[in-house]
Image (cartoon, rainbow, N blue to C red; front, side):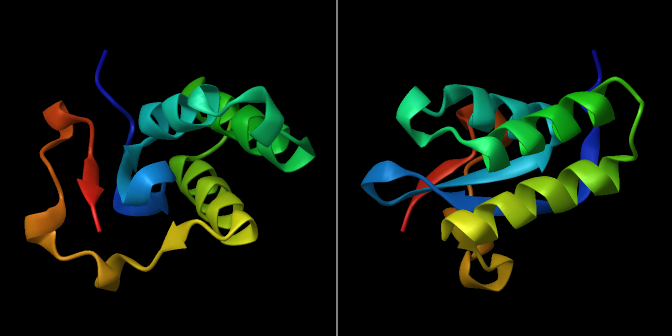
Length: 100
């Protein structure tokens, strides 16, 4: 299956000083699905539902991108894309995680 790519990536902080590059709706879904139960709430559920709806073609990709971006901002884990130099971003085959 061809990934449904965003027009621009979204960068979110993870534990241990890592940054994850979210380049497509599948990356967003993976990020949200990997969060522990204790970190899930109504915002998480709504964001995940929006991403699944976009994945299934019921919402545009830009809506999923904005949802995961808004989630990151609300949770304080959104990283400004200008703060992440390109040399710090691993290729997508590497999972998109880099150290800050």
